[in-house]
Length: 410
Image 1 (cartoon, rainbow, N blue to C red):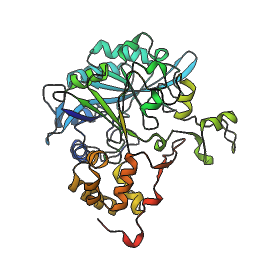
Image 2: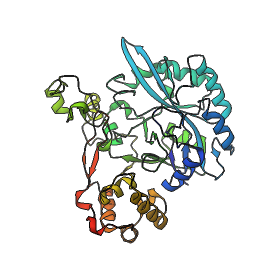
Image 3: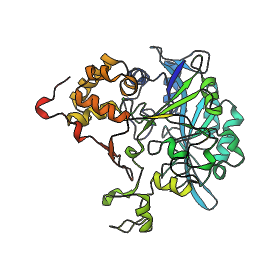
Image 4: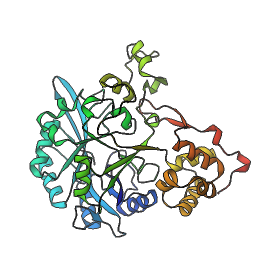
């Protein structure tokens, strides 16, 4: 069976995250999106963990059901801030566990190294090597994946506090690292240019900070297995067998794709940044070096190289975002929800609408301009104003905008 999973998100107890996060809301929105297995996020948090234990029932395969039958997996993100080789390091890691008993053991170990009550993404002064060794001593079933691997501020390859290689970051514990997460500012093709990733699997998840469909499942990974299970998902991540494809945010829309300085409204391609020594031409401060630049720095292979472990991937723009663009309204507009709900009722979940609904059916279910925009997205014909220095990129969809006098709740 085909299993679509989003296994990196947060809870209402994480900083800068929506207070609307709850198991029922995540469950309902996951169904609307088309997700089959969703992460709990923040599994170690002392307020969230009791809610998880109360709301989720183990189904005997490392996954859990909520009252509505949605499948959940125990997940979290950990922040490691420390010094190695004379440089400050800041790396975020995704951590998965198959049972509450193992989560309880993780909590006990984490409490020996700091607090876990102030944020859903707690910070520890541990190296990637120390943390990985600690987790594997608890259980070999725990899986660790470098989160949003290229983000400038908090990632394994990031310009601000990352490394030039996974082996430098994980040392002798690299044997326990089997995959990296692309993050929304990179895609698999960019990662295929890195030699050490030739044999590393690539996964994509949303890192959602709110439970709504424009964030939840904006990136996801598709697995093939007899039935959804923790063991099956982890086995696919470790071996590549059963890892089918990923759904990817267009990297240009990610908020760290290019170099720049948002305070000065400066956005530059890597080659142009290099020409001015990565210094903002307006204020003369250092630019935030984006993902595209960092990939160029570390790449061995040219653009177009395909890794030996490569899996297919497809790009996505969230449907609500496309509706807002086509209707010329804000994402929070009532009209966006009305149109979105009618399309979902007609075609099924959002992934079906965006990726698989035949053109003839799409034209029946949505306004012509919106249907054509979705078809253009599938063919990668949408242009973008690229993201930089914490500013999301924007799809340019002027040719698909519905004239004001013709707009209606379709």
